[in-house]
Length: 336
Ligand SMILES: [Zn+2]
Ligand SMILES: [Zn+2]
View 1 (cartoon, rainbow, N blue to C red):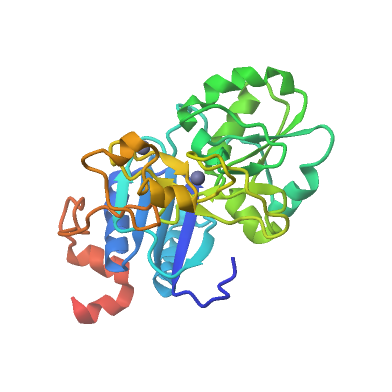
View 2: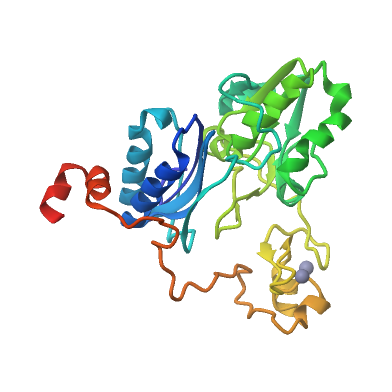
């Protein structure tokens, strides 16, 4: 998206499948870089690569992107860049996990085999052809808020359950299958899995819905795109936008995504403005009366308490001279 309103912050979304021999050591270094440059968000480091969504001042995000790409293993990383008035995360988490997306498909390496990548303009041209089916590989709470026109969606609450659902798609084996997800990462494995299961002609939307919105105007994406930060949902379609979700309470068309104000429910739902105020941000009368219900301010987003937040938490060893110097380059000599 172009930064037409001169917003001071960037929001980055990216992934890179690449073998990391020393994930824990790299995690430390990466975490420290984020802390030192006021980058916030969620980053997963695994033996199979990197996956992150972060926010920071534009200049800090530029440094961050240069830092990631300066490592030959991640030189090919593509960043989806959006702009915002503020940070879209309250904290930084850099975690080691066995996979960069929890998929139950650890045996598949997209660098060896995956669906053919379609750039947004190619996807746009191909999606309405006769022998093509569009497959949304995301979960219920995501495709209920927004999806491509005519897309096949799956009744799953988690991407882990994708392989099981593929059994229901047997009849599509001879079609051209175009998969898509938010930023492209799930499709790397989902399309690889389809090929493994005998689907013959499998494609994936490179960069996902987010890049499609930026580069192809978002045509025929109906509703909004669910995102994993404080914004909850973003607009994608500048060509023929529609609302497909309905208020969970009264059933009128609404794409106002909120988290239920009852923390023990915390369900992601569309609730219209009117019902939001009436139920004070809760999804039901029971949730409204819950003793721990959080105060509603009209946004439906609840920042976790950040008092006493220590960004260095999670760093196992104290930043040492060598590491600081490595991260800051030559200029560190004067300040260490
Ligand atoms: Zn309503
Ligand atoms: Zn609730």
